[in-house]
Length: 607
Image (cartoon, rainbow, N blue to C red; front, side, top):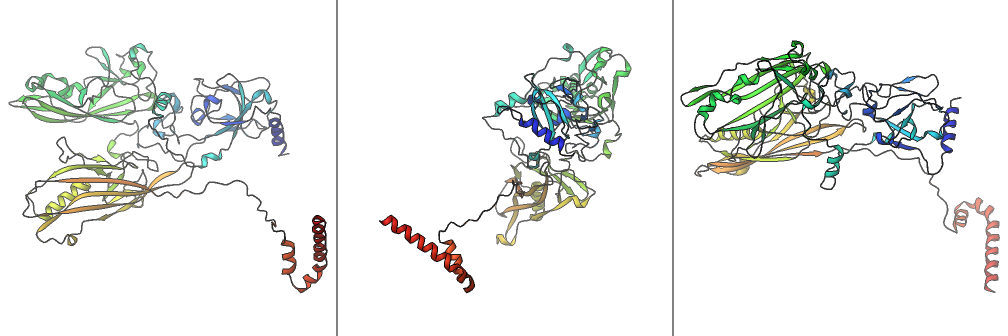
């Protein structure tokens, strides 16, 4: 009884002509639903009744939101959920906030993620595989597996059966981009830039990831956009028209130059903190149809002291140097709260005065009332993601491992480059020596190389918790040996630091997770004579990542029969004479007969 449906299905497949074969596929263009199309709340296949078949059919490319389950063609019309909830959400990198295109992130509070996201990140939905044939070849489906009748891009109806895909058990390799395929990839995956302004489009009922955030100025009854100035050009000049994107937490830095700071001090709105919160934010885009309605307006709350610019003698005081927006969102219900804080500084009025400003926008879930209670952003969940910061631990404080960064004149800057996981890098700067004794000079140069505070441990995974010591591994450190220099009247100072990180993939081959095995610091030093008048020393920091993954052998096919046949003509004779005396007696007669026959044949040929 159990084999009858399978046999019947095989009979239908055997009736297929030679030029028509079942083709496995996972591309929407081939009438096969993908994981992102059939995931929870995704767009894609819409079931419709069809004649002459017992399975529903659909047209790919439909904008209708599809169901989260598939209707099986097995007897009983059971409902099979092919994409159950993932136990681990690998793209949930920001605690308490919604990560863009992460369809399994619970902080997004979205029943149908594809209504807000343009696609689902790999790993946030289950993978699947389908085998399809022309629907005209199928009269009735008795397959116990879920099946569907789909419409391909050419309008041909295809009968598809959901099967297990063994290829998902292999490692996924990163796609390589070079000069040959760069343009093809940019054309395939790129979208239109410089999209039309929102005035020419009908307002959306909710914000989508990347949408500009609408603002309203009540005193002028003007609708505008929340701006996040960014640097452009070689000088990094501030571009005021750069809009902030919904759910896009990022930081920008730009520079401003003043010909006459005395006039610009109190007249330039970019220097006045009040110009960054004298408006309201529209909760959802459809609010622009009635911006004066208070239910659509979200006030900007000031959470730090913000003084107005003041020209006092030769100093312009209370100039804005940093703006931080904290925006709380609640899925499709839009923006709920907006907070702003400022950093201010004083500028000296002189020709060619410049100011560097930083603009930070952070998004978090509405349920979280305090940002201080949230842990820092993850670099993976659980495994590291290439390009994300490498986590380090000092005492009980988690931070990011860093490298040297130089100023414009080449000297060492207080700011430092973040170490990105899987990215080998080298940086350097010039360190100006101070008149200190040797021990204090050594300590200061060590701190300059490895940063403050000094990393003691490195996170094994990208979601390492500072409170769990078992999630961190100690960093081996090898300082310079003073005795090896054989110098009595000199000072041995470190000039180079090499950070070596050993990492590997572990876990399921279908979804490997990168973890750090060990890390170590290697210092190189040089000696400076007390009599030498050295004013500066070149410092260098290097980070290298070594992949030590031991990949298992791929599964093999069916075992082959190892036939061992005698290829020696005299094998029967060797076997006969190799046996004991008893066996030789029993085999003498057949051997003599064979010899006589062979001699007879040779004699006939010679005649």
